[in-house]
Image (cartoon, rainbow, N blue to C red; front, side, top):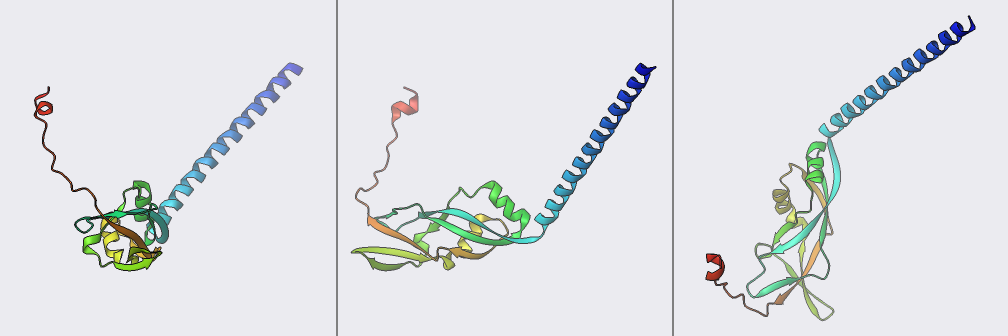
Length: 170
């Protein structure tokens, strides 16, 4: 008789543990579901965020090359829906923003015996937005100026002649 009571008590304990585990699993499922729905709701609303974009200078004047001591990065404070901002962050901002020097009005300043050039970043907002293609609005850009140095290029690029041996496979 004692064995029966022990078995019955063990089976009741086992059922209680199973019911408790089932309740925990249900609670965890709905907790995760509510978090996902909350996050999707958040992404649909307008928000602000900052991303960092590298800069690459293109089209220097003829006979000049751009020399930079440091890698230049722009901090962009963006305003837009969460979906457009997260798309930018996920797709990556490793692709540099190209700044066409020949199309920009840059200024010169004498700094330590060296002639430096700079571009004010508020002028670049339209260029940056068109390159990002995200549907976000740029609220602010830091730093406020981008400095670069133009050096005369020493070597003239020579046109490459095709190697007929390589083209024929031998």
